[in-house]
Amino acid sequence: MKIRLTIGAAAVILVVALGITYHLCSHIIGERRAFENQVREWTQNRTSIVQIDEIMEYRGKQSYAVVLGKNAVGTPVVAWMTADTLVFDTMDRAVSKQSVITAAQQGFPRARILHAVPGLDNGQRFWEVTLLDSDGRYHYVHYDFMTGSVLKSYAIQAIAQS
Image 1 (cartoon, one colour):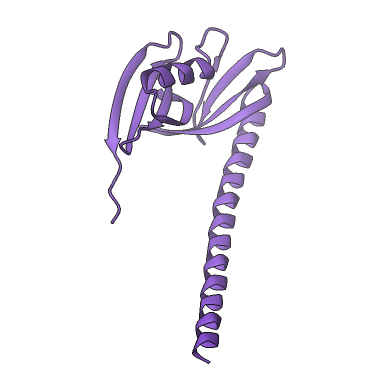
Image 2 (spheres, rainbow, N blue to C red):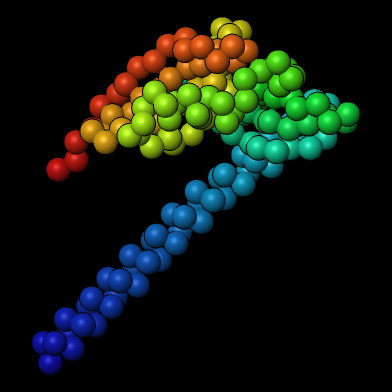
C-alpha cells in the first residue's frame, strides 16, 4: 500500500513538473516568436532588406534587434533597430561573422563560443563574441566591425550555485 502511494505521489509530482516545464518553454518560445515577428515587420517597413538571413539581439548600453540579410541587388547588409531607431550598413567591407568566430577560437582555444552578434554603442559598430571558458567565466570580446582588431575584452565570473 505504501509503495502504491509513493509511486502515485511521484507520478503526480512528475506530471505537475512536466506541465510547468511545458508552460515555461511555451512562454519563452512565444516571446521569441513575438520578438522575431516585430523585427520582421520593422525590417519590411523600414529597410531595403528583402532577404533576412538572421535575427539576433544585441544588449549593450542600448538593446537592439539586429538583422543580417541582403538587399534587392544581393548585397549583404546589417540593420540595428529599436522601436525608434534604425542604423543600417552594408557588409561588403565588414569582417565576416565567421572570421571573428575563428579569431575568438584562436584566442580562447578551450572556450565554447556562445554567440557572435553585431553590436552598436555610441555609433561604434563591432562584433561582440561571448565565450564560456572551462573555469566558468564568461568572456565578452569586441572586434572592430571593419578591421577585426580587438577593441576591448572583459570577463565575468559566473555566480556559484550551491
